[in-house]
Image 1 (tube, rainbow, N blue to C red):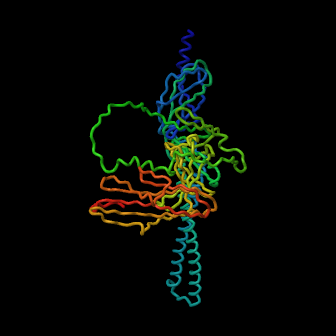
Image 2 (image 1 turned 60 degrees about the vertical axis):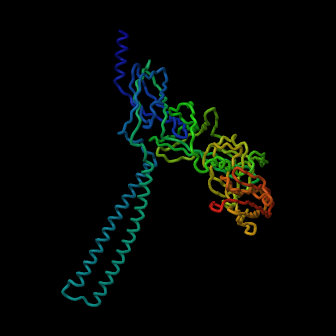
Image 3 (image 1 turned 60 degrees about the horizontal axis):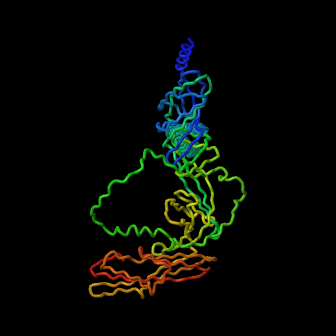
Length: 539
């Protein structure tokens, strides 16, 4: 009998579906995608309970769904579906304000149009009345009456035309404002708000009690992008790198005051570790001069010798003006075997319309050696470079960086976290106070014919002047050609070319020297090329 009562109660409880709204409380964001955590509380009766959880994203990877319960409640089954007829979430205060503004603006616009029509009607009546009074009467108007009539017509016409111009100007302004408000409303109310994710659960409760549900799932409709602000107060002080992030999501939900975590991990999405298959060698033709492409890549460095130790500027402790709280106090960085995780101990609200939100992460200082670099054959501008040793310890990610040099924004650069170089080179901008001029010396350049061959000699002079009031380290580069055929002979004339380093693989020579304030130095590069008369070269 007791068993029968239990089964009856069980079946009765299953007949009523309880609808509960969930709230997003946590989000772990990856470069592409995010893991969301929702919570919901529902009162359960003993036995089977049908529960409908609303407020989930419609863009869910169902395979990633995980549901946790309290009070020993068992999830016996679940089903995820999308409600395409669901109303959007309760409108935010911004959307409500925009709707009210659009309504008021539209009413103002309608009134102005009505007034303009009334004005046009008055002008029509005025013209008709004047015409009738001057030509329609049996008795001709006297000169005095005609003058008064024309004066009245002129005064009234001028008044109505002035009102018409004013109304037209007001209508134009209201139209512009209305278009802006509507565009802003569409942006704020766009993307994914027309549907909602629904989770139907069957929960088995051992006793009547409140149950807190924790629901986690992965959605691809979110992500974050790292970027940096790099600041250099002067070349005798350390470099400051502020790490930041752009966070966005189009899940159709507005995340309100959630706990946010940023992760560099990438969900595997079903990837399997690769295995080798047999490598069969076959003959193939070599096209063009592609053999040297890999060697050319080695020129992606600025210093002539990246392996040599460099003297670094000593780091002096720096304190921000009005020192107080900073994002460093709220961001915790942890590094494990797979990824870097930034846990932010502040609540964040991120709209679901895809609009990027900028979040500060950490600010770090690092020692750097500052150099001035110029390759005048390619560009006469002198670039300021910062070389950072042991940059791997900074935990940087690949991303764009905004550069401020000596208090002036100079542009953007890119940090390549995948670089294999021992030192990280950052371009901080150009400095016109270091002038470089490259010119061909005609007296030392010539063309001679040797039987069936041509021998050409090229000589270039490079002049560098430091117009600053401080000492600098200058790196200067130039280039000579590399032969890819036996019939072409290239000779670097060493007796007139004195270099600091010569990279023969890519044909680049470097000079690296210190320049005192106001000092000028000259450099020279000479090379000869011997080739058959019937051959045309890109010299």
